[in-house]
Image (tube, rainbow, N blue to C red; front, side):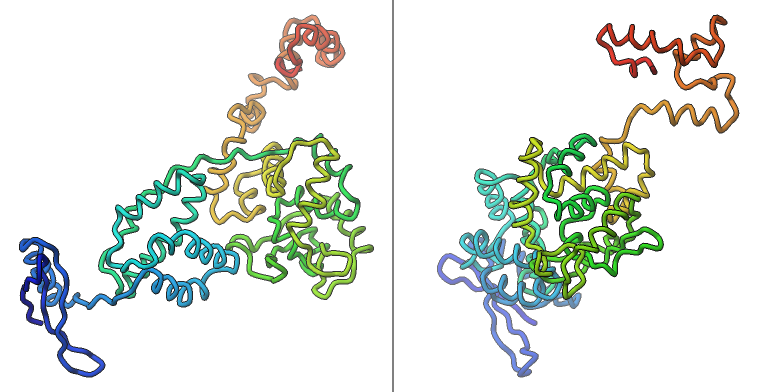
Length: 406
């Protein structure tokens, strides 16, 4: 390829001839290089360098609207889950196209994209903007791979900082009150959500064949969205969840009255059809919270509640990760690490016990018991009885007896 610099009006162009691989004929191409001769020289030099190294390729012409349509059809529709695809289509149609639709892909710069982010932040939450940036970055990444742009302007677009939303967690007392106020036929669904931490789609896609009564486990194999079955969120989401004895019994009783379902659904409507998740929340979950006089929470917060209960019981964090279906233990720690107790004397005492240092840690259950026994005024067997008035004395001060190990 031999190129030259030509000036038309106030702009310089790189003029070159390239072989059309379909016809084998030479074609003349004009590439806009800017208003300065220096810019044109640099562009021509860069092009010649790419020709000699074999990395030169002709950039295809396309507007943003044309490329986004191609990207959705060629990539998103074949790779993404239906819910994700619908989200991408909505974002492109309602937000990207009105701003960038008629612009050439090669004309869109990092500055333009960052201005878009700044403008959106004035109208919506940072989390919404981050969700919009995801398909934007993917689109421009593919545009480079497919030869529609040379450099990716989206790669340096900075995501806004998103503050983690405070999760709502029900305490045991609230859980019992909630279950007492749930419509009886929906109690098994809500109880399963609380005792397993399963996602809403996983619950609605659960089939009777997924329940292993021999090992008291639930096998999560699918998720449901808009009445259709899909693979779970990730590879780690396909998992086996251990059931509590209460849940085992509740599901066995539920099976006796569960409507006959074409797909053997565990949770379905009276006609055996898939439950509508939005209707279930509006007509059953929120009214139950209202009857129980519990603050309004999301259905997903039942999943957070499950993890909080597991952490409170000192379950191994790796076990928790597997049970709730996180792809990595880091995700579990990042999301729930703040719930892990920073002070845990019980675990510290176990270190003494396993090494046989009982003379230092003592065999009694709390420090006050040990102190009373050491005075010589009480035998170890008498300590429990003598703590009763001591507990009353401490309580009378306004402090909790547990503060002092009582």
